[in-house]
Each structure stands twice: as C-alpha cells, then as structure tokens.
Image 1 (spheres, helix red, strand yellow):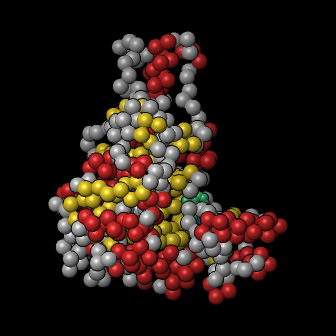
Image 2 (tube, protein in one colour):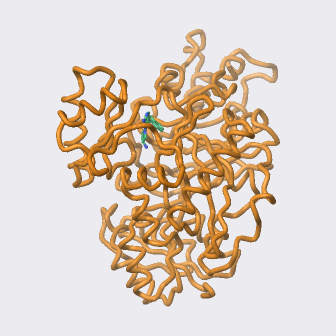
Image 3 (cartoon, helix red, strand yellow):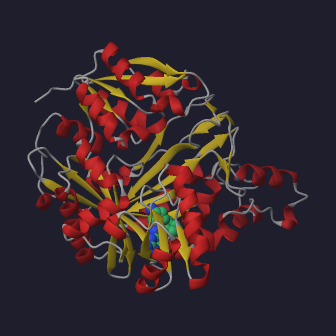
Length: 499
Ligand code: MV4
C-alpha cells in the first residue's frame, strides 16, 4: 500500500488550513492551489508549495479538475485531498485522480455515484434495511414525468408532502406542499428549479416530516471492510439551508437511539462499499429517524466529532487512504462530554447578506478546550467571490451546559473588525432559553429571528451617554468583558448588556 509523503489540497480557506495542519503533524508535505483572488490567502501562506490554477474572480478555479491534477503531478504529490469542496463529491474527479496514478483521499468513485442521486440512494438504502422517509420515487425510481402522475402518489402518501429533486441537495428544487390544490404549481416549480440548478428535472415525493431535527452520523470505513460510527451531530440550527451551529452529541438522542442510528449508518456505508470518512444525514422526529442522504466527504462540522472522540479525522482519512486498518473498533469508542461549533460568517446577520472587506482587527479566543479553525488573518481581504465563512469556533465541555457557557465566554473574547460578522447572533443563541434546553429543530432561527437577528440594541436611557454609546456600538463585534466599564462597580450599561 502507498506511503503518502506529499498531499495536494484541492480546496481553500479554513479546511485547506485544517488539512495542512494534519500534514505537518505527520511530516507530510502540503501543496496548496490558488486562484488569483487567493494569491495571499492563509492556506497559500501556510503550505509548503503553492500552484496557481486560475484567474480571479474564480469560484470556478477550484473546480478545474485537470489543473489540479496537473499541479499535483508537477509538485510530485502522492495524493489529493479534496477538502469539502465541489471536487470532493465528483466520481469523475476521483477516477481522474486514480488514472493519474495518485491516491484520492476519499471514498471509491462507485460509492460517490451510489449516493450521488437521491432516488438511486433511497432504493439502494431501502434494500439494505435502512429506514428512508416514506415516499414514492416514481415509475422505475426515475421520478415523476408529470404533475398528474405525481398527484395520485401524493394523495396515497398523504399531505403534507415534500417534492424533491433527485439530483438535489441544499434544499434546491424542494417544495413543501400542504394542500392538494397547490400541488400542480409546486410540482412545476420544483421541476423548473431542479432543471436550472442541476440540469436534471427529475422530481420525486416524500412524506413531509414536521419540525424535524437534522441529525447526522459520522462513519469511518477502512479498506479491510471495518466500518464504525463516531456518533452523531445535530445540525438543525440552519438558515436558508446553510448550517450555522452544530453540536455533538445531539441533545435529543438517547443512548438507545444513538446505537440504532449508528448501526443503520454503518449498514448504509457497507451497502455501498464505503471507504474513508462519510456522513449519513437523517431527519429525526421523536424516536423516529429517516435516512435523507449520505455525504461522501469530510464535513465542515467534523471538529465537534473530533472533540467528543479525541480523534483527528483528517489523520484517519490519510491512514485509511494508505491502506491501514482503523486503529480501533466500535467497542473502543464512547462519546466524551459535549462540543459545539459556531460558524463565523462575514455577513450582516440582520439582512443576511455577505459583508466583504478587509479584516482590520482579529483577536481569537483561547483557553482550555477552545479551538478556532480559521482561514483568515489580520489584514486579509474577504472577497465576494468565495464562501463568507471565515472561521469555525469550536469548544468542548464536560457536559452540554459547560460547553454552552464556554462557547458564550469564547464568543465574548472574539473580536473581528473591519467587516460585519454574525458573532452577535451566536452570542444571543448561547443565551437563548430554548437552545439552552436543547429544545430546537430546523425551524429554530426562523421562529426566534426577532430576538436573534436584530441590530444590537442601545438602551434608551444611555443614548446620550457618549462613553456607553461607544461601548455599545463596539458590542456588535467586541465583548463587554474586555471593554472598560466607566466605573469599577457593576454599572448600569454593563448589566444591560450582560443579559
Ligand atoms: C425534508 C424535510 C421534511 N420532510 N424532507 C432540506 C434540505 C434537504 N437536505 C432536506 N431538507 C428537508 N427535507 C421531508 N420529507 C425538511 C427539510 C428541511 C431541513 C432539513 C434539514 C435542515 C434544515 C431544514 C430546513 C428546512 C427543511
């Protein structure tokens, strides 16, 4: 089996930095690729070598499969790690990497393909005994050609139903239909959206699960056929299908449910001959859970799993890619404590718009069990061309409440200047009663947006107090704990802000 000495990372930002760090610890050389817009990016600065792969502006540069492979050959790399970018779930890319004589750090192309199409995956999973959401994949599992054909199936399932794109993901081409009379229009809308987003208008049906939690199980498989799960993550705190906060373990999953879901996720992986890191996504409602899809890559939120297991998932990916067996069995694993991740976005979280610009101030939190996986540095430019996620703040605590308190503390230490961020949003979530009680589902942000997504309030009796106003203005990005109170006592403005 191959020994990996040099890895090219086909991604950018914080995940490229994360992979470079794993390489350093393993004495593996790390090769970065960059678009012109990213010439001065952190991952380029940190890598041992870096190769240009395209012009700016260039979200697409990182999709240039042939340029990435050419760079890997030129650098003399043994392997390519696709990060969690678009190249990570493309079977044709995985094949092209292998054809170039390089190791693809990811699953076999056949497993990517088996999970890449939703109706195909549903059929595959059903025959493997994995519970999928009750629904109808259409004639021969090829979706429904017309609203008339789908309508009968929808009535049989019972309203409300969910129309979904077979090629889909991320909520595109998805429609919730509550009433019969809205079905035809919704069908046509879903079909149109699926066609334009994926070039494939195949639409199928599922029973709508009401107020579900999004719970996903991390799995790992080696080339010897061992499959284990590394417990679950709750990713229900999302906005417009973008995850914002994740935690492990899920506060609504009992040890018995955890064992069942974990076993099912391993079954799903075995059914497609999976190798490496993968994630099975489920909708959870009470004690019921349904397979949604499998992500055949390392995910953004993998650090919360690392925190509760003490494992380095990137190191494990590399070991498995070298043909080594997993160094533990299922029985060796127990989840320890609780971990939370807050995704820090360069955005105006009131209007929910990206906030590009230069980062002028960057003070990251520290202390015990606090991890900041960042792709930026003071002076870095946040470009409109890329994802506005600039870092992930992850904390661990001996239990969930300790983790929440630690996250609140770490968020208060975090200072980012020059751009707008969602730090204030995160601070409010950590103090939200429903969140603290673990009582949330995928509708959480929408339900609480009035309190979570409003501008930082200035108490009216302090509006004319210049010092307080300045401190409060800074609060959006700066922590009250670091700003100097006007007196030594517990001043009024400070009590106000502490709430
Ligand atoms: C569902 C659902 C309810 N019932 N399917 C949204 C994205 C896609 N990956 C799956 N999604 C959903 N599928 C059925 N049958 C509710 C959602 C959903 C959702 C899922 C996970 C996280 C956030 C969500 C927000 C809205 C809807």
